[in-house]
Length: 182
Image: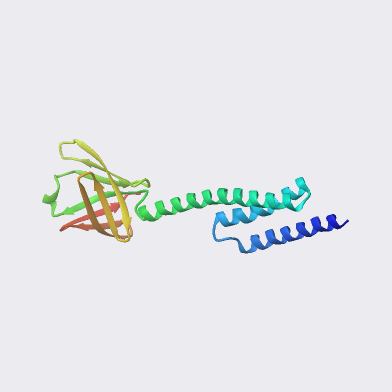
């Protein structure tokens, strides 16, 4: 009879802990996983072994397993946030170059489209007056209002601003005006 009350008491404590956890949560998935895993592990250990040692072993294994699973989720979430922070607000957008001043800084073109991809690549497609086409890929990242574009051998820091569907980028006495396509 005493053992039955002990098991019932343990269930009440664990259910109360889960209720508290659902109301407050943990700061990380790793913490939540460790807490939930320890409770489930303790319950499983008690059911299987029917003694305190089994309960403690189950709690330890459950906490460790829950922590590892939650930590992987935290790492994935951090990587996703880093990508958004590094490429935002340009990632996934396309722009038409309206003008480059002074114009003698680049060869004459009839069309230039710049696509900022979410993987850190910026692809520029230029069509020249003779109808030839050039597609170049560079790396980019955004730090505040600075657009950093680089490829082996060079790096350019543009100060940029976006106002609605227009963007102005300035670097080394060059001003590029762009219009958003997407």
